[in-house]
Structure formats: C-alpha cells, structure tokens
Image 1 (cartoon, rainbow, N blue to C red):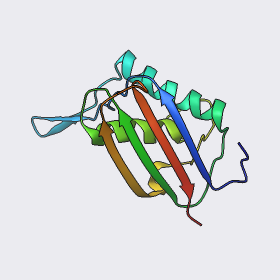
Image 2: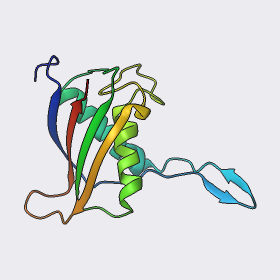
Image 3: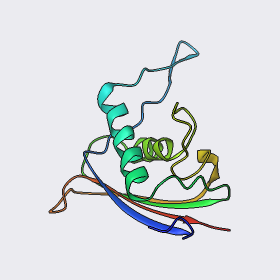
Image 4: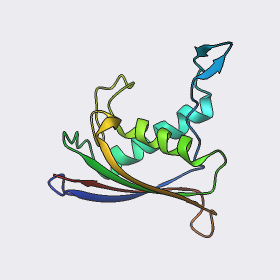
Length: 130
C-alpha cells in the first residue's frame, strides 16, 4: 500500500474485544487494568495495521468506518479499543500507525455483524479528510 494514499482498507482477523473503561465507585474513578486478552486484541490490530499499511502518522482529521464481525461487548468499547490501537498514545514503541491522537477522528461509522463465513475480526476503512 502506498503511504501517499489518503484512503486505506484492512481486515484484521481475531475476536474483537472491548476496551475496559475506568469505573465509578463511591464517587471516585478507579482505573481497571487491562486484561491480557484485551491487550492482545489491541496489539493484534496494531500489528496488522503496521504490517499491512505501515506507520502513517497522519496529522490531520481522520474518518473511520469500522465493521466488527463477532465478539462480545458493546460497540462503543470495541471502537475505543481499535482507536487506541491505531494511535500513538499509550504505546512505548513511538509509532503512530494511523494518527497521533484519537481526537483526530472527526467522522466515525461503526456496526456489529455476526462473524459469518469470513470469521471474527474487524474491517477498518480509514481516510484522511484534508
């Protein structure tokens, strides 16, 4: 794939996992620690993007279209897991597979479907908007 392109599509195989959010208890937020299988899913998405597309590190606004096939958990937390996997924040490798910060995502479409014949995973369509 040519990094000069402004539009990419990639299917990442694997069971989609939701991102754990901090929880509110007794008026205070308590951070949940990553479960190994959740971190493994985000790492899988990140590695597949880097292998299939490379590190783009787009600086402008980004559009994401995500289709999840199979997996449990609510859609918004699955979206967050993919957003985190594609950004530079929170990773020690210094790479930005798609963007530097998930605040750059200004357009988003997402849906869940049964795994079907393709099997579980997520189809990611990303576009640079400027």
